[in-house]
Image 1 (tube, rainbow, N blue to C red):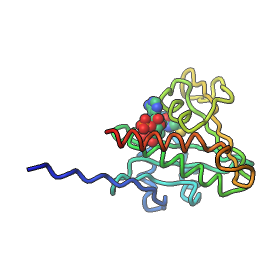
Image 2 (cartoon, rainbow, N blue to C red):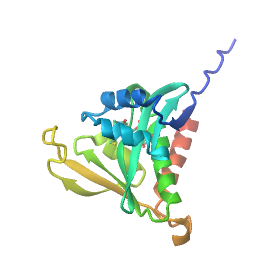
Image 3 (cartoon, rainbow, N blue to C red):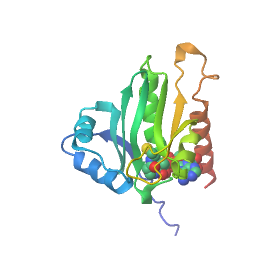
Length: 185
Ligand SMILES: CC(C)(COP(=O)(O)OP(=O)(O)OC[C@H]1O[C@@H](n2cnc3c(N)ncnc32)[C@H](O)[C@@H]1OP(=O)(O)O)[C@@H](O)C(=O)NCCC(=O)NCCS
């Protein structure tokens, strides 16, 4: 008899609240080499849709937190636990941030800093059309050498051009590639 098909795990984003902020702290502590202040977590809880936990079924396995910085959105943290990588959770979080950016007409770009040695993250962001715009020497004070790339992706709002020429092509292509790859597996 054929084996029953394994049920596909559900991937979702959920709110960050005072009740689950400890899970966010734990996730960041495991993923990032820098520690974040109590103020960071207090602000994150107040950040509404700019902070989200990533769920795989009922498990919190990742999180994203960003803020508006002038006319840009700045991604402060975005990550998922190592055993749950390459499942599409990172993509789900980037897409969430890009949707927030597209919803706000004054937002012109999304940007973030990444350790120059974090090749996985650089490749990940490039998949979505982010580009290195600058490299800052000694950006991470507690890391050595601590140099960081600034990665940025411009946001084009609907009224500024048709969908075939906007800057979101990379996301569409990346999503199409993922679908194709999944079909092939
Ligand atoms: C970067 C990170 C968030 C990616 O998360 P993820 O859930 O593994 O990413 P996804 O599964 O959504 O990947 C989407 C696409 O990005 C690209 N990608 C992801 N990880 C990659 C890697 N290590 N190398 C090359 N490309 C990669 C691939 O094209 C991938 O699609 P595919 O799996 O169909 O080939 C994750 O590795 C992580 O948490 N790293 C530690 C935290 C961090 O460095 N965050 C960035 C700074 S804020």
